[in-house]
Length: 175
Image (cartoon, rainbow, N blue to C red; front, side, top):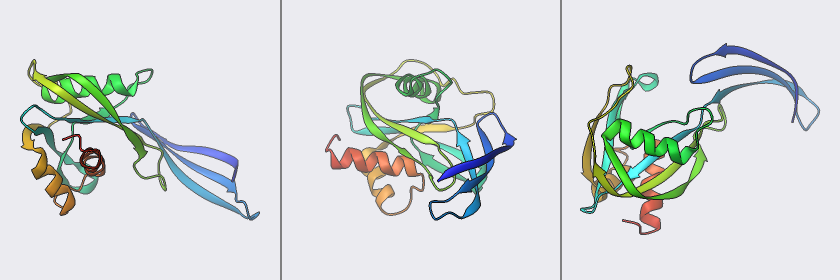
């Protein structure tokens, strides 16, 4: 595929939207719309008792609250691992002494390029209160890892990054 022209039709603080004219491999010309999104980091923070830290927040695009892993955007120039440490502290007040990268994935490659980096944080400790952004409203709680795994498998958890992370942790027998 070759880009013939690229038009930014929206610029926002988290993502930009493009309407591009492209030449397909079969010689046809068509249009593609794409969202250019900042990358994100998500953290599966598990304590010594087998509890995982979860957050619940209202997700405007789908009109409902979701139970999910703590996560957030990677700031420009920031490494995803540093964003994970920052987001865990901001959303839960916890820090971790042990970190392991679980992998990364594109959340919806048919429409946008958001890449989410997944981390396992262990040897965690509560060090402060939450430090939420001014427009961020969420609650966090500790939930048994096995309960979260069951909820992911039976469709009670609808957040993709959470489902992927807990299934990776289960498959690698990390919890």
